[in-house]
Length: 280
Image 1 (tube, helix red, strand yellow):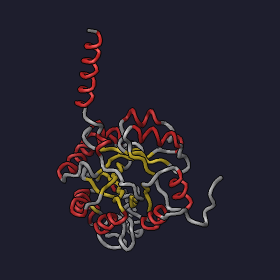
Image 2 (image 1 turned 30 degrees about the vertical axis):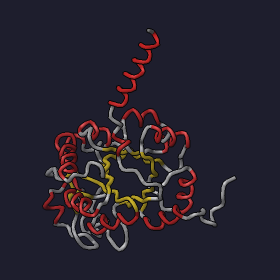
Image 3 (image 1 turned 180 degrees about the horizontal axis):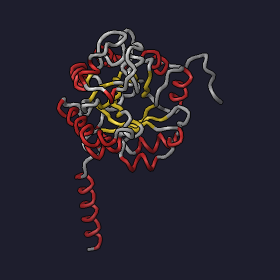
Image 4 (image 1 turned 60 degrees about the vertical axis):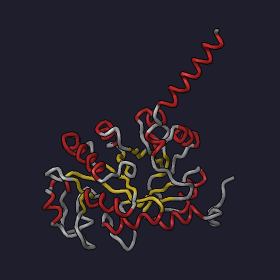
């Protein structure tokens, strides 16, 4: 009788486990085994950053683009990397995006042509081109009240409206957790600093779908534990051949970079670059 009850219990436990849905991260898109590149700021020559052509072109390097989302003074979502418009306007305008309305920021001509993109324009381009996106919430800690009031909800809804739930990660260094609380159905990522690269328990507890590790701290045990939990693991910004080789040796194949084609070529080479000595 005890054996029958034990067998029945085992069947019930197995059925219960099968009924539990897989973690969201387990069903997110994962590189197919080749080397892929996330283009930082969609900056890929001959395209200037943040332009629709740059987002579409990023698909060619195997993954997509990383973009930076900010709130304007009238709570509209735009894409600007820097804290001011100085660089992208060629020094003509030095104001902060957060201090300008959407109309004001759109009226500022960019040094290489065009105008600051809205989030909606970027999502439309990603939807039509097949690009995947990483969206960093910029300066969440400085503007948390505004982000919490409208920004996070508007960002989440825009992703859903474009049907990009499985092709967009949202986060950064501080914005991922607030966004996850606002939109638990969407994917988040964490850009780990060297001081927090080994904090696996924290990363797993908070439920990130993707973690970017610094090349200076690529612990195989950390990478292994994250992957075992279904987390996609990649690097932070890498532009040097030696950094690509370091990450390659650690088993990583997802790179964020300004130099998409070169990084992907270095990684996909059948042998490591000959001018980089192998470590003994």
